[in-house]
Amino acid sequence: MEKAEMLRITKQDGCLTLTLDRPEVGNAFDARLVQCFGEALDAAENDETVRAVVLAGAGKHFSAGADLGYMRAMRGAGRDANHEDAVRTQRLFAQVAEFPKPIVARVHGAARGGGVGLVAAADVTVGSPEASFAFTEVRLGIVPAIIAPFVLERLGPARSRRLFLTAETFSAADALAWGLLDVLVPATELDQAVTKVTERLARGGPRALAEVKRLVHDVRYRDAAETAGLTAKRIAELRTGAEGQEGMTAFLEKRVPRWAR
Image (cartoon, rainbow, N blue to C red):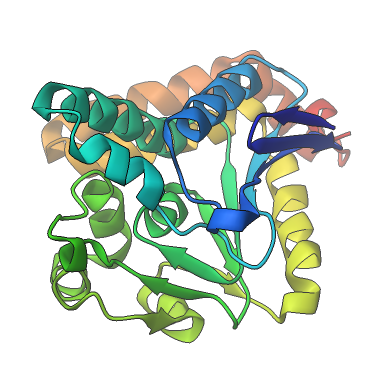
């Protein structure tokens, strides 16, 4: 087990777990945690033994979002310093969303503001009924600008607008119905459910998993004509590549592909 300041890092069976470890402040983000988190993802991207990443929170809550003490310090730091800080934080959320390996969020307790953004940026989200969510930025006179692209992708514009405006707290059941959570299980079964997801992910080819994430992004944000050419080219490349050849051969030979052993 490693601990990069406020982030616990563990790895088992190809699954890397990054646990936000500031329970005394509800695992809130400050500049140091953002840096540690980004560095851990960089290392995981370059580690071929890592097949999936799990994001979790230590203690009672997943993440309270931005650290209020840090926000207080940034209040008097000037516009340029605040812009640089926002760019660094935005980069982390984009890194989660665009990470070439699957990211699973394990959600319990409260998720607020940026904590909800982290959930929205993940690929698969698993939560317990005790989890709750809110975007409370407007009550501080600010807006959830950094996380908005990821939340809108998960919740849609109309629902996101309402939740951003009202700052209301919504339940895990609502989060499941609205698509923020993919799986909802009792708290006692949370780890088992996360493991089940990561085991399913490990059966996919590493390159294929990365290409799925690229495919969804490209199809979502390109026009139809451009998408048609892109998707045909991509499937041809994968079918003739080493991983695709191994996957199809394993299927025909009724055996497990090498990457899933």
